[in-house]
Image (cartoon, rainbow, N blue to C red; front, top):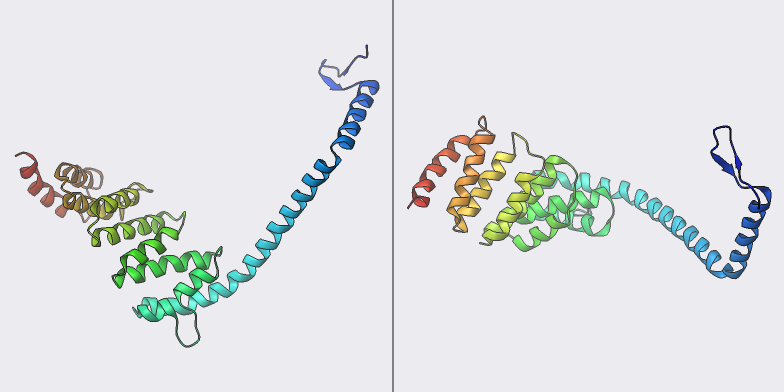
Length: 233
């Protein structure tokens, strides 16, 4: 029986030449028996890598075009020329076109956010919800803002339960002193509309307890006081 070589510490470092040759022979036999499968897997891997590289090259090329288009239309958005911003004008693409025609780019993603805001301002709540739900961001401010805006759209549609869900997401995401109290106030309002006064009181209390320096505290105390009388009855 062949012995395995060991180093000075006694730890195995390599098989004996005879055993190693046996392993090589086994590998050769396996390859010959499964040649088509092995080659097929290899080709698939190469195709996948090449496909991903080609996709990234395409997306990178699209990104510059999309960013230029978005830069032009943001001026219309900021000027509250909402229809012009959404649909474009003077040969420039609008937010909807940028969002749909350059999918996979950062510009398309941001265009979805702007489009959602514009549609919400126009009272097109279902379209606004759809655009905002397709937007994604790891930014602690914009992500929570998008969730809150979806909540606004649902509240305008008198769907308080859905609004509560999105306001809760906005309030729980990366809590901060500036925006979280605002989202909590919206959450409490939705809870009131959903006839959940006890939950609304608890939410107002969170504003008072967790964000005592917030400008929302005065209203939170006032609304909490009004509701506490109802809850106690």
